[in-house]
Structure formats: structure tokens, C-alpha cells
Length: 299
Image (cartoon, rainbow, N blue to C red):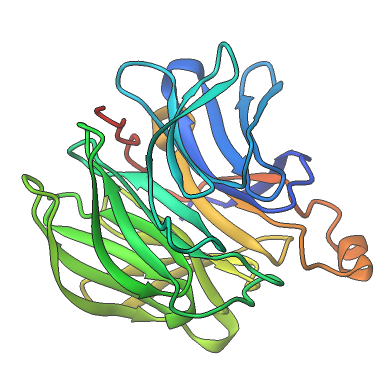
């Protein structure tokens, strides 16, 4: 193993940083700050951050094949134009649930934008249970609903052979797998592939590496863990100097660097003194594995 290095590359003070996505074309990391209603783009070369503020909590962002981005804002799938700072709704979900919002989202290998909902929290991880659902925005802008009764819809990714969909509903404390049909986007046969241990706390965002292993950010656990979904074993734990780690993605040169987002909200003043970098963006190098480029939304 090469030696692992962890550094805070951006002291952003995100209230709840989430959804890191690497954009190769601009050598940039996209991410959101959910309650601050901000989509951010950090240029890894100039070290500058640009921001677009939107009208509701923004929970995920993704690349778009034709240029620009897509994002989940409130309960809407939106197109995001970076040049004129505008967001246009493509579809709306959970119209009957006024207290809901989207949470994590990611584009599948066929260019569909998968994202799930949850009830708005009264405090971090405190919310009305079973109010969320998992959806997908197809390239033609129609939406399919997969299932409901979700607590906190969270991390998601697909196996390298595109036959398995991995998914986290945070309060189940489990990483689940489904059979996945790339052609239709259908999922079936849900099962758990990993149950979190007590000190790992709450499973949050997730990404896959080129060896088909899963990396899960553990909220309140201050770590990312590497899992083998075939054996159900944890292979590695990487601890960070912040407690509320929220999500992770690979990026940088050859996708050999890992970027991790985290949150400040819910941390008391003493905790913030102990974690001055809470809410920042972290880069982990020396993991010895690489990730795969994100898929762009095809609509």
C-alpha cells in the first residue's frame, strides 16, 4: 500500500456538503451545499470556487451530455445553466408531500438520473420516517418511481458490468443491491450486501472503484469505508479529521484521487473548535485504486 494522504483542499464551511462529481473537461469538482441552496464548482488548477444559488435546497448535481448540468432542487429535477445561473424544472415528484425534498442522486450508465427523496429533517437524521421514494428521470424527461417507504434516500452506484444497482437508505444501516436492467432501467431482487457496524454510524454517499469495490462515506463516523459487495466484507477504513463525512467520489488525474464532502450543521461550538475543517472538501491520495468517470445525463 502506498501511503495515504488526506488534505483539506477547500475550507468552504459547507453547512451540508454533498454530491461531489468530477468534471474532467474543466478539471473541477462540483458539489452542493444542501441547506445553503448552493451548487459549487471548485477549479483544481486555479483553486477558485464558483457558486450558483438556487431557490430551494439542492441535494445533488450531475453532468449533462449536451453541456451544463442537472440538479435535484427541492422536489424538482432541474437543468442548470452555469453561464446565466438559471435552473429550469424538467420534472417534479412527491407533489402530495409538501415536507419532502430530494436527497442524493446520480446518473446511471444509460444516462438516466436516479435520485430519491426524504422528509425534511428537524435536526440532522431526525425526520418523519418512510416518507421518501426512489425515482429516475429518463432522457425524455419522464419520471419513473421505483419504490416508496424510504427514510433517507442516499448513496447509489452501479456495478462495472452494469448488472447490479447499489443503494443506501441511510436509516436501514445497510448497503443494498438490486438486479439492474441497463436497457429498461428496471431494478428487482433487493438484498443487503453490507450491514454497518456501530462505530461506522450512518451510511451516506457512495461510489465504486475500478475493482468493483464500494466506498461509503459514514455520516457521524468520520470515515470512508471500502467494501467488497460480493463477500460482504469491509476491506479498508480511512478516517478523516471531521465527523460528519457525507459523500465521496473519485477525480483528478486518472481518477486516482478521492474527494470527500462533509457537513457542519449539527456540530456544537466545541465540536467545531476541534474540527476547524468541518464543512470543507477533502482530497485523499495514495489509495492505490482508481474510480470511473461519472456518467452524464442523456436528456
